[in-house]
Image (cartoon, rainbow, N blue to C red; front, side, top):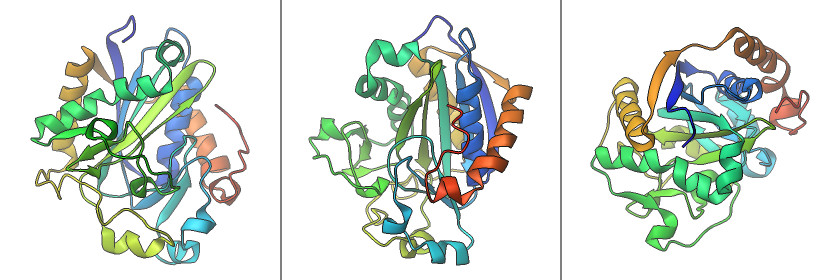
Length: 266
């Protein structure tokens, strides 16, 4: 995949929506040429994440989200509105040259290969939507839409993946849903949510906790890419920027609701 087969591996545990996205952006922004590529795994407190160009007021009951105490954050990546809670998310940060060599669609296909291996190891028959000849559907709500390289199980979409690029690097992050709290999240949507038919590990009879799932993810990742992972923590510069982004961007409605990028780091 790149000259180095060694990846930094950061296990961030469970965080708030704002902190999770602040860390992902900090890792992308702090990445320099010659750095080791990064794999990060993390969980969420119950939340919704919005795509970079999502229109929350057209799709979500924002008053109810506030009343119910559900986190809400805007990602720097594209894609649609996605629910989080009982899921494991990943982020990969790679040199910008990776995307230049492959293009966007091919990079999705390649990088999502470890997810296909993961689901196969769990006994699930997963494939890209285009391999199942499923039509694409455009919507601002992630699980209600479908693109060529979305992953499906038994015809139903599972999780979502999205990318963002800086001058030096690219970020791909996505989610592996263990279960979905449909009763909590369905009332928050003003349009079709896709939650009813969305695949999860529980729905596909492959339920497990986050810690056990992490072991399967690491095995699938290292086998797919011929990689080794070295456990690490955030560097001082990454932590400092993540804290700044948390305070000045990801907890501000100017970003989350109005999509006004105050800091424009990446």
